[in-house]
Image (cartoon, rainbow, N blue to C red; front, side, top):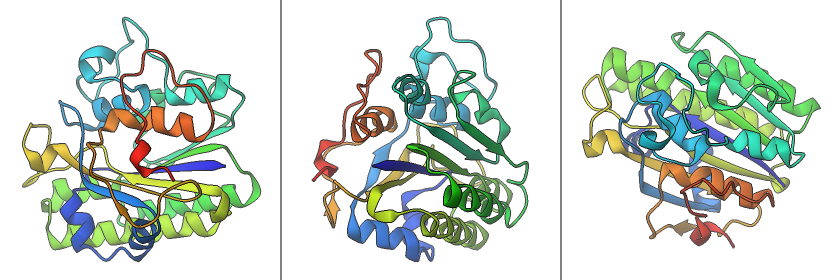
Length: 260
């Protein structure tokens, strides 16, 4: 089994529901979904992603802004744990600060494109990811699509431009999924935070509520998840899917309701 984690920066659940997203809609119909998952505070990109990969709140890992600082009491990243277990790992991303989500040496392949401010940046990154995954299959791949957040800041969350960018991100997801064996791949689609007006970072529900979609082998089909899901549940759930023991320091839970 392989896992691909797609993160659409700044994706609100109602944005996902209102935009044209046939590829994610298919994942939802074939898998499990919640529109009420929660992120962490501060609801900003680097703190949220660090919690998503290190399985603890920002107050524990110490990343409180979009500027990385060394951890005082280091928590292993999902990527570090998978690498130590002999799993192959890959990153595809277009916001450079995410380079610190794993320790040096834990990634087998890492691809960064400085294009999240370009209208088709996510689709361009997805083309690179698809070309790579056709030839080489990691156990875990992270595909980060940053244009949705830029559209929210530039035009406003829930604006026509924001919804259109979600649609292009869906096209990007489809391109990546077409490049892999979907019968052997679990796909997770989620976000780091939401947004309101032209900003985020607060405790407002618009900033703190995110979607969480999972589909693939071993996943219950057509299920609306009822139990709470947190952004810190991602590393524990993904490690369990890949039959790797979660790190003892992770605080998240396995989203067992989604598992067949």
